[in-house]
Structure formats: structure tokens, C-alpha cells
Length: 168
Image (tube, rainbow, N blue to C red; front, side, top):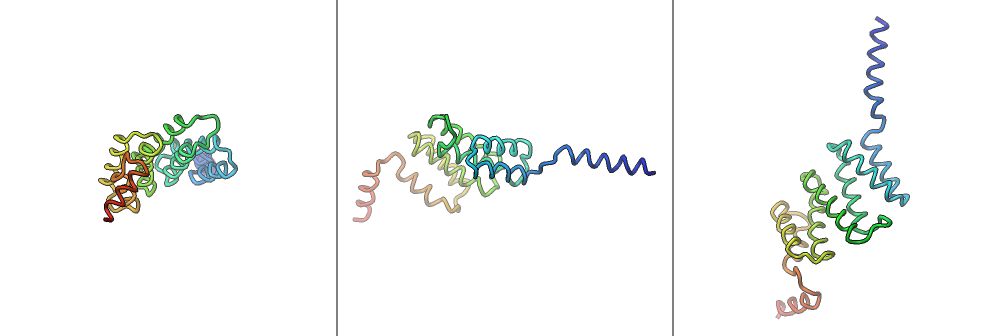
């Protein structure tokens, strides 16, 4: 009987011991790297979390952190176009893979924002902004998206002129 109990306890230890770091610990570790400005390590940690624990409540948050790092061009030795492309990839993963997560709305909004304000690709921006309005019409970002759509492709002077005309 002692052998059976020992084998049972050993099997529990081996099963649990194969994954000694849980998803929260993985997120916290990557977040610490981010706080310590170890950006490549942070991205690697967040990416590993999302791949190994895609159902984790921390996966979308980690991917959003990766997107922000690339969107803000913080990762060293990567030029802006490549960084923006990577940011778009991460934002899209968030809203495609985690549509019910609170990070999905922001990710979809920022996808449109990058296309409009960083890349000047108005057709793509319109596509993502319209998708946003279809999916999240009552979002806290909905007014911002409407403004973006109303002024898509206009220069600041053209927006001001449009605003002045509408107030007359």
C-alpha cells in the first residue's frame, strides 16, 4: 500500500512539476522585464505566455504589451516600419483571438489608428474603424472612431476648416 501511495504522490509531483511556472508567474516575470527595460526579454516572455497558455486571462494582456512596445518603437535595433508591422500583428492577434477580452476593443481601435496616422493607409484604416463600429458600437472608443472616420485623410488645417464651417 505504501508503494501505491508513493507512486501516486510521485505521479502528482511529476505532472505538476513539469510546469513549475504558472501563467500569472510568467506574466509577472515578463512584466518585471518590461519594468526593468529589458524589452526583448519582456516580449519573449509575453509571447511564450500566449503560446503556452493561450486560454490564460493574462495572454491577451501580454500580447497587448508587446503591441505597445512595437507601436512606440521601443524595441532596440528595429526600424519604425518593421516595428509598426509587428505592432499591427500583435494588435490583430488580440482582437482576433480574444474578442471578448477588454483589450480587444483597444487593439482594434489602435489597428485603425496605425493605418491612418502612422502609415497613411486610409482604406485599411477605414476597414478597421468600420469593423470596430460594427463590433463595439457602445465602446468608450466609439466617439473617437467616429471622429477618425469623419476626418480620415484630412490635414489638421482641413479638419479645422471643416469644424469652423459646421459651426456657422
